[in-house]
Image (cartoon, rainbow, N blue to C red):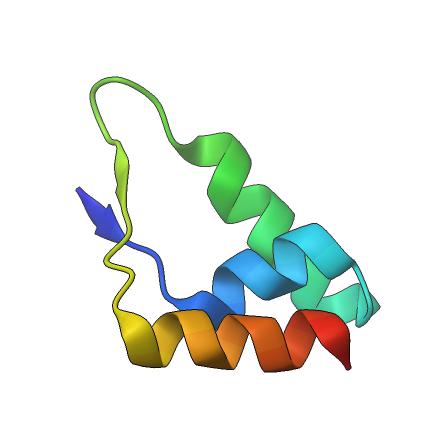
Length: 55
């Protein structure tokens, strides 16, 4: 199981930094049933994600 933090998810969704986005894409596409991703999303993570996505 691979832990995914807010930064990885934001880079995967936004595709705003080519280097970081390609790493996030590769990680997301490597996940499968045998090696799933795990996300914890508390209030602080939700706030951070909102700030990043809104700009």
